[in-house]
Amino acid sequence: MTMGKVGLYWFGNDLRLHDNASLLKAALEVDELLCIYCLDPQWLMPNRYGLATMSHHRWRFIKESLIDLDKQLHKLGQHLIVCYQSPVKAIYDIASSYQVSYLYRSRQTGYYENQQWLSLQKQLPLVQFIETDTHTLFALDQLPFPLAKLPDTFTQFKNAVEQCTIAKPRSPVGFLPSSPAMKTDWLNRFPDYSKSEHEIFFYGGEIAGLTQLKNYLASENASHYKKQRNELDGWQNSSKLSPWLANGNLSVRQICFNLNHYEQQTGANESTYWLFFELLWREYFQWYAHHHGKHLFRFKGIKQQKPLTSFYPERFQKWCNGNTPYPLVNACMKQLNATGFMSNRGRQIVASCLVNELTVDWRYGAAYFEQQLLDYDVASNWGNWQYLAGVGADPRGKRHFDLNKQTQQYDLDGLFINKWQGGIQNLPLDSVDVADWPAVAE
Image (cartoon, rainbow, N blue to C red):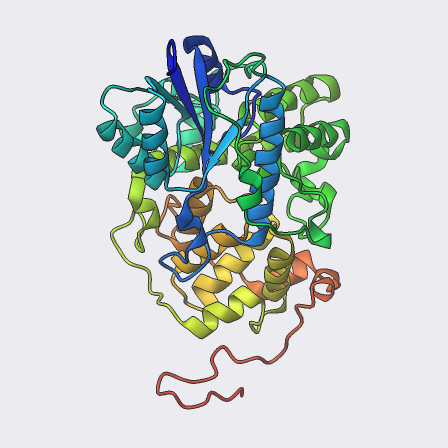
C-alpha cells in the first residue's frame, strides 16, 4: 500500500536530467515517483512501408541512453523501469496498481504519441496529466502566434520568433522522490546489437551528449560551421549533436545557451549565427508537426495536389542499398547504412534522387531514414522530406538537385565515392520495363 501522492514520469524523447522542467516539477509535487520508459512491441514489427521501425544503430543508441539515464537516476536514489508493452497498457496497469494520481511527461511532437496520451486521459479520469515543453526552444505559450496560425513558411516563422527570449536551461535535477516499485532487470530483455567500427564516436546518453557539446565548442569549428557544414564526411565539419538532441540526451536550450557563451568568449560571426539558424529550422518543424498532426505522413503532405511519383520496389531497394546509377547517391546511402548518420548535404542529395530521378513516393524515403538515422526526429525528418518533395512548407515547390553538379561541387576528386564504394557505372534503373520485358542499358 502506497502512502502520500504517487506520481509517474513517462520518459520519451527527454532522456536526461539537465534542463528537464517536467521532471523537476514531478520531483516537487509528489511523495513517490515511478520513472517509466516504454519499449513498444510495435517497434519490433515491420511498419506500413515494410521496413523495421529502428535499425540496429538506433536500438544500440537508445539502449546506451537508457543505461546512462538509469545510472543518473541511481545517484538520486531512483531507478528506471522499462516496460516491454504498448505505452497505453503499461502505464494504465502501473497507474492502477500503484494508485498514481499524477502523470508527467515532456510534450511529444509525434502524432501517435499524442494519441496515446489522449487515450490514457480517457482511461484514467482521476489522474492529473501534466506535460511541459522540454524538446523545443520555446514553450507553446511563448509563441507570438496561436499554433493554429503557424506561419506557412520558415522565413515567416523565423522573423516572428527570432527576437523572442529563449529561457535559460534549468539546472539538473538534484533530488527525486523514491520509487514504490522494485528495480527490475530490464536490460537482459533489450535487443542487443554491437557497435560497428564506424560508430565509435556516437555513444548514447546524456553524459556523452554533454561531452560532445563541450568538445565541439572547445574547438574553433563553430566559427567555421557555415563553410564546413556541406562537407559529406569528417567528424569536425558539423556539430554532430543531432543524435543526442533527437533522443533528448541534450536540451536544445542547453545547446543555445552554450553557443551564446561561445560567442561571448570567442566572437559571433556568420557561422555561429548559422548554427542558431539551424536550431530555428528544427524549431519550426517541431511546431509544424504539432500543427499538422497526421498530415505529416500524408502522400500529398499539407498540399492539395499529389506528387507525380509512385512506388517502384526495385528502384527503392537499389536506393536503400546504394546500387543506383548515381555514384554520389550510392556513397551517401552506404555511409548511412554503415554508420546511422549522413551529412545534411547528403540527405538532400539522396532525397532529391529518390523523388526526382527514381520517381519513388517520398514517404518510403522518409520511412527508411526513420529506420536508419541515429538522429531520427519525427518532425524534422518528415517535415524535411515534405519540403523537398514539394508537398510541405517550401513556397518554391519541389527541390531538384543536379547530381552531376553536386558531385563536382562536393566530391570533385571522388574521395568520398571511393571511400564508400559508390562508383557503380551504367547500371539501369529497372531490370524489367513496365511490360515486364528485361530492361537493356543503352
